[in-house]
Length: 66
Image (cartoon, rainbow, N blue to C red; front, top):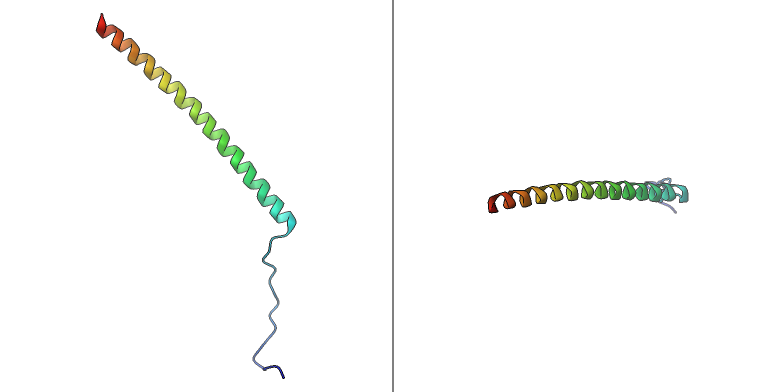
């Protein structure tokens, strides 16, 4: 005999379906691509700034030597 206090609970399907997993993976890939593009853009800006600062430094050192 089954105890009276035990009730069968409906199991919740917590595992993602194949479609959900594909959407999640696609979203992660898009996020990675966007982050990578942002990093490359930031790297370009920082490189240009560094070059400008170096050129200014060279000009300053050249004027001091004269």
